[in-house]
Every structure is written in C-alpha cells, then in structure tokens.
Image 1: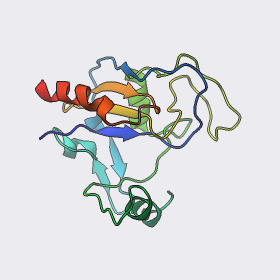
Image 2: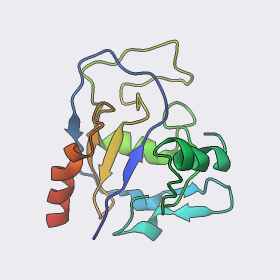
Image 3: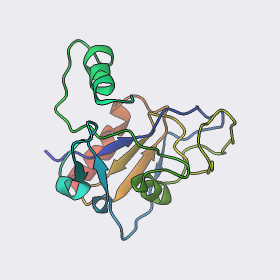
Image 4: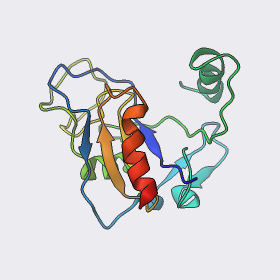
Length: 167
C-alpha cells in the first residue's frame, strides 16, 4: 500500500482567527523529491527522492525518540520510521521544503496575527502556526492539501488519502 507523507510543523502559538479544517494546494512543476533532510542523529543526509512513490516518514535524538517511546504514544512504542533533525519551518532560517510547501498550500486561517511571542522573523501570512498543522503530499511529490492544526482526528484525512490512493 502506498502511503503519503504528512509533514508536521514546529511548536508555535495557536491563531485566534477563524480557521478552515483544510485548504487545497495549487499544482506546480516542482515536487518534494528535490529536497533533503539530515537524520536526527546527524549521521547522514537523506534525499527525499529516495522515498519517491512510498513512505510515511526535541532537541536531540534521545529526547525525540524517548518522547515517542515513553510519552506520546508511550507504552514502549517504537515506530518503524526515519527520524529527521529538527528544522525551522518559518522565518529567515526556514528549511527549503517548507518554503516550497507554503508556496503551493494557502494558509488555513482567515487572518494572520503577528505576535511578539513567536521566536522567529520575519512573520508571514503563510507561516505554519502550530505543530500539528499537516501537509498531504501525493506519490508524485506534489502538495495536495494543507490541514489546520485543529484537524487532530486522523479520520478527517481518510477520504483525501483514499482519493489519492484511487488515482
């Protein structure tokens, strides 16, 4: 079964504006397979092209891995996935993949509120505003849909994933 990559943002502040559960992305010539990311333990850089047609892909390796294993979901859970290093998703140092995703997927809130409580600049209307914001990517590497951070129930994504699997 083909899985689609759902990318998450970083922990920021929630917006107080009206929000939409999801927004459709626009089509472009580019895809995510032109990007890469460093593994969480720093041992290698992985080209996203290695995941073409597949995949579901803290401050340190131990912190993040132990957080998954012992806290959320916890219970000794050990996922079978690749961990990448923490990156900036907004501001001057944002990772190029987020620049790409935000260029094709509109912001999910009706307004953008600049905040002094955010620790990056510049602040832009397309910014990822919370760590559970999601981007759904097709197997061709094209951004398909952007989901608001309030879309916590995975069942909400089910119809979109089923549609993409049928293509």
